[in-house]
Length: 353
Image (cartoon, rainbow, N blue to C red; front, side, top):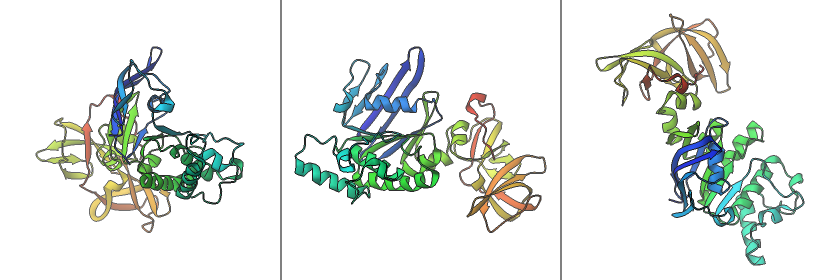
């Protein structure tokens, strides 16, 4: 593994900020620490960079311990590159000088060759003589990325790198950055509070809450097999229905379903219903449209059952049902997720339809 974070603990005075965090990244793998503000993700990133001291645990880069309770390798000696939220470019330096800033140990020809290669890789060819204020926000972010990659670090750290960009630019640049990092083969760790950004960029995502890692998994598994109701809520819309086990079936307000894998043994359960878990079905249960949200290719509907329970459903926009119209739907049996009904309230963040 290129990066290994092994059971690390950090605190600010008496306040415990990171508690027992563990994960690892292989070469070319993009990981993400995802969570709400104050969950400890940025503190963990700073610890990997060498800016925060550990109470316990270890951080290893290329199998070498760079942080422990007893020792701490200086940031500049860790083979770590970092892209900050505000880019932190030198305004008085041209693009080529910003990118080559950390390459003073190389000869002039070696610096020129590496910078030219990075400008081409990041789509900045022909912009080397410009100053940061002459570039767009997306171009500035690519300069910051090129500068961080220039010393060929073992690990690249991205601290909320797109938060200052508008939504459209953020989405497009995220795709570009992922392609660049995959081509480069650099182990990368991203910190963000935006689950869409995490899903678009990362191979593995760790959702954090109160300094702990709730689940470290692929985006697909995090969405379809969340470990807790909080994970389910943070990674997508949905609704909870009361459910119970009867024989080898799950009984709920939408009918009967086969028991999902690893179904809890509790008598009373909560069934998570995602908008994409429902499909139009002429033989299905009749539900009334109580609200709708047009989203271009899709429409997000809020549907009411006869007992007043509401669920969300996502259908192609050519369906175009109106409020108070009755439609028939059924539950898609794949990826059903259930939780014990007596989950501690602190773990159940509301999942809004």
